[in-house]
Length: 289
Image (cartoon, rainbow, N blue to C red):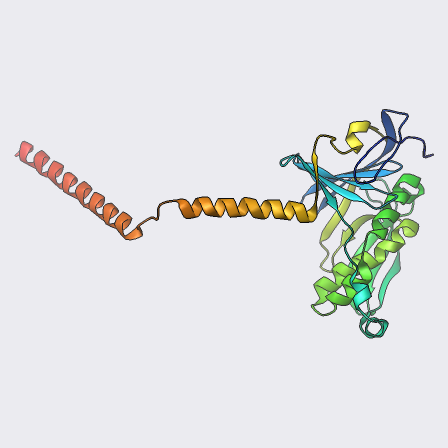
């Protein structure tokens, strides 16, 4: 499937600008489910990708060339700019890296099954040849599509696996394997799209359920709402902090509840009910004698 590089559109937010001659673009939609049965949809075109996580509250939009990522929050009416995190590697000497860096390998095991119409190759993610993190079933056929391959490569560039792996090595196997997943991301553009991930206990933790390679998107599907306020993550955290402070002030302003008095009132009410029942019973008894 050929990719048209001329399908672009204008977007004037924090220096991201793309030019368009068309109101629609062609691309790919990939749908998947994780071990918690949470569904997600990734819409990809030549320059952008949109990730919907199954909620109508918003979506994530990524510029594939620059790596800039934004979260659209419909509940707050804002766009959150995910600034690049400062890499920890500049604070770690090469000597420490050499000593702490474990060996991460994506080892081919043979042919995998056909998963949702795509033949796969079976790979195993290993650390230091002893720690089995996961089994990955990759489809080279899926990454023959340039749009898909471009997206997988862009996602790999956004992974900070080396530094995460070094830090995770201080904590335990689970964190080590999560970081190793970022390391092997770099190989997926060439080896194939991960159609399914399985943990060492045999549980499917992620599976692609469908791929539509003939999708089309309206311009508004792949852009940021122009009328939404643009905030950094720090500004959004500050806004939520202020809101929490206001809520705490409202709670503090509420009259204090005297639990002892409430319990006393409940006991008195229960006693009145018992007295009323006894009185009613006595009247009935008297009336029939």
